[in-house]
Length: 193
Length: 157
Image (cartoon, rainbow over all chains, first blue to last red; front, top):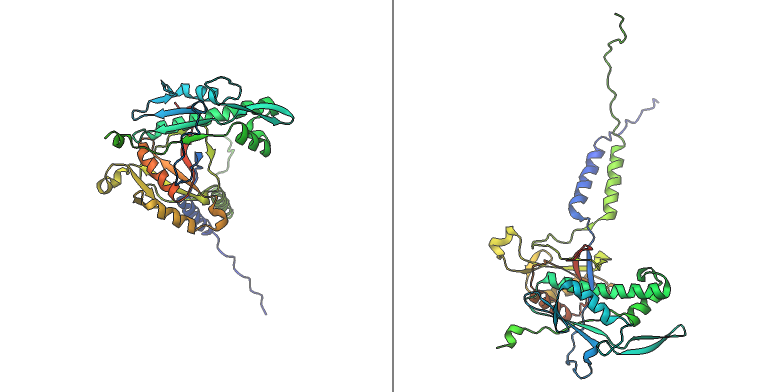
């Protein structure tokens, strides 16, 4: 019997096939990763929160009006002034009648004075532009991040992001929580009528 | 004059293309790993605001996108220029969000449902009223974890 040689398979079109696949993937997929400010919305509650418990010194009111002017604790300020003001408000080192109430807590055998309650209350109008709103949110988040970093550098010799998870939890929840409260939406244009 | 070169007709050797498919396949694998499936084609203007304190959106399969902005030019004749909400591939009203979130939930298993994030891709010129309406709708269906998608920029203002 004569041995037959199997002819080699022509593979030149393989490149074309894989090109088609490649182009298909280019079309249906997206490359970019999204970055964003992550926030937790408050759950919808049935009964309104009573105003009695809120003490004025524990709350830092930020108000953004229809013409995108920013008002912090009653004064109209520029966006660049917001971060230092919020930092000063949240800082556990700032003592005084204008700053939040402090309480003692024991950390690793040492006593530390931390804010009892400190909340930034953010109010905006329906006509406020989204850009300004995000800028304000960003400044509030930035102030808290900077304070967390400062605290971690002082006590743990590392940035907040580089600390261990339990330290991050402790600093992020106990010392400097991201306490931004957004007022229930009020339609000011309707209210005036 | 001496002849240095003999003029011989040289045939250029054919370029070996057998490895070409392999190269393209490597490219495909690269793209398959680094990209994710496109969710929907965006039909509204999207000029995202800038922010610096941002976090990367993890686990894209658990993210549902809500786009808000004025319709792009090609949709002007049909949908006008006022701000609209886009869910999946169509324009919708605020009332549609609840059904949208419910259908998004159905596609995920129960363990992952609590980790679901709603990404708000909002044009920077949108007024807060519309965003607030959307946020209220999200609160009603207890989709509480949201992320305001922004472009990452260290200089915000």
